[in-house]
Amino acid sequence: MDIDSKSLKKPKEREVVKIKKESSIIRSIKNNWILYLMILPGILWYIIFCYAPMGGTILAFKSYRYDMGILKSPWVGLENFRNMFRDRAFIQAFKNTIIFSLGKLLFHFPVPIIVAILLNEIKNIRLKKIFQTIFTFPHFISWVVLASIFTNLFSSNGLINQVLINNGFKIFSPLITPDGFRGFIWISNIWKEFGWDSIIYMAAFTSIDPGLYEAAEIDGAGRLGKMIYITLPGIKHIIAIMLILEVGNIMGGASFNQIFNLYSPPVYGVADIIDTFVQRYTFEMGVNFGYTTAVGLFKSIIGVIMITLANRLIVKTGEQGLF
Amino acid sequence: MKKRKNTKFDILLYFIFIVLCILILIPFYNVVILSVANTITYAKHTPYILPFTVDFSGFKEILKDPFFIKSLSVTLFVTIVGTTLNMIFSTLTAYVISRRKLLGRKFILNFIIFTMLFSGGTVPIYLIVTKLGLLNSIWSMILPCLLNTYYIIIMKNYFQSLPRSLEEAAIIDGANDLQVLTRVYLPISKPFMATFALFYSVERWNEWWHAYLYISDKNLKPLQIYLKDLLVVYDSQLAPQLKSLAESQMKIFPQSVQMSTILITMIPIICLYPFVQKYFVKGVMMGSLKE
Image 1 (cartoon, rainbow over the protein chains, first blue to last red):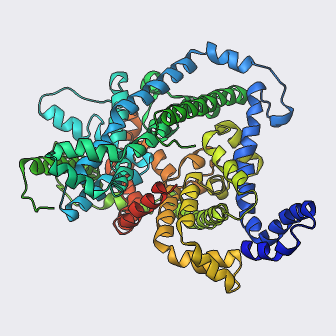
Image 2: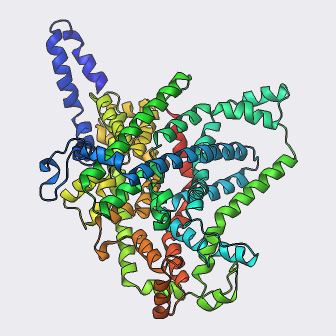
Image 3: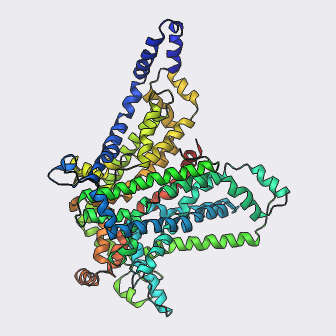
C-alpha cells in the first residue's frame, strides 16, 4: 500500500508541497486504519494496567483514605519518604534486597554460562538434549509448588533430615534458621533456573563461525583453550545484555515469588526484600497505602537508574547495549 | 572435524551432568514416592528412599474435596481462556508494531518498552484493579496479565524477520493488513506461536499472585492457592498441632495428600513439556538474536 500511494502522488509533488505533507499523514492513517484498530486493545491495556498505575504513584505523596480514593486523598508532601528512611524494617529490607541481588550476581550469573559452554562440549546430540530437557524442567514449576516440595524435603522428618540423622548429623533446616536462609535462596534459585538461563547462551553458540575453531586447532589450541578463547568471546555480547538485565533487576523483582513462598516469621530479618515488605505491610499489616506506594516508587526509580547506568557502562566498553 | 574417542575430559563432563540431573530429579522423585506412601510404612522406613508402599488414598482424599475440584476448574478456565486472550492480543500488538510503514510506530514501540523499565508498583495496580470491580472475579487473574511486553518484543522481532515479499504478494492479491497476518504470517508461524502459547499457558497455570491479592472467595481460588493453603495446614514444622489434628481427623498420611496435590498440579506440565521443548529453544533463539 505504501508503494501504491507514493506512485500515485508523484505527478502532483511539486505543485502543493505543504498540503501534500498534511494529506500524506491523513492518508497514511486512512490506509492503515486496520492496523490502528488492531493495536487499539493493546494500547488501552497499557494505559489501564501500566500507565494509570504510574499516575497512581502520586499516592506516594499522599495519605490514602479509603473513602476518598487516590485523587482526593490529602497530600502529605514528602512525609512518606521521611518515614521510610526512619523505618528500621524498611532499611533492613532494602539491605536484604541488595545482598540477595549481589549474591545472585556473584554465585548465580556465571553458572548458566559455564553449564552452556560445557554442554556445548558434549558431542552426543541425543544425550545433550536429554540433559538439557532435565535441566530446564524446574523452570516451568511454580515457586508455590517448589516451596511445598522444599519445605517437606527439609522439614524435621523430611528426606534430607532423615538421612542426616541416620548418619549421626544434626538437624538441618535452612528454611527457618536465619543463618541458612540466604544460602538456601541462592542455591535453590540456581537449581531451578540454571538450565533455562543457559538456553540463551546455547542459542548464541550457533552464531559462532566454525572456521574459528578449525583455525584455533591448527594454532595448537586444546579443548580448554578453544572454550576460553573462542566460545566465551563468541557469546560475550549476550553475556553483556544478560548482565544489564541482571543489574537492572537489582531491586529484586525476580526473587519475590521465591522468597514470598519460602520465608516465614523466624527468618523475616534476613529474608525480607522490598517487594515482600510492600506485600506484607500493605495487605497483611494494614499500613497506609500512601506509605507502601512510596516504598514501591522508591524501588522503581532505583531500578530505572540502575538499568540506565548499566546500559551506559556496557555501551562504553564497546558492546551493543539494550537501548 | 576428526572423530574423537571419549577422553578423560568427556567422562568428567558426563559425570558432572549426571550428578546435576540427579540433583534436579531427587525432589521430584521424593514427591512421587511420598504421594503413594502411608503413615505406617513412613514410620517404619527411615530414610524413606524407595516406594515401600503404593497406596493411593492420598489421591482419593484430594479428589473427594469439592474445593479441590473447584480450584482445578478455575485453573483450567484461567489457563484456557487466559492463554487464548493472551495470544490474540499479543499477536495483534506485536504484528502492528512490526509494520515499518506505520505512522507513529516508533512512538508506540517506546510507549510499550517504557513499561518494562518503570512500573507503578503493587499498590496503585491493586487499587486500579479493585476500582475496575475485579475483586473476587475470575477476570482478575486474566486481565491484569493480558500482555507480556517481553514476549511482544520477541514476537515483533520475529514478524520483522519474515521475508517482505510474502506480505507484498498478499497485498497485490488484495489482502488487507489483518488478512496478511491471519492468512500469510500465522500459517507459517505455527511452531513459533506454539512456543508463546506454551509460555503463556504455563504462566496462567502457575498463577497465584493475582489470586492471592484479589480472590478471597473460596470457590474461585486457583490450584496454586489451594496448594499454598494446604501447605499452611499440613506444614509439619511450623504447625505441629494442626498436623496432629489433621492426622487424627482424616486418618490419612498428610504428606501423601500434599504430595498428591503437587503431583496433580505438575501433571499437565510434565505431559506437555517434552513435546514442546524443542520449539521453545527455537523460539528463544529467533527472538534473542534478531536486532
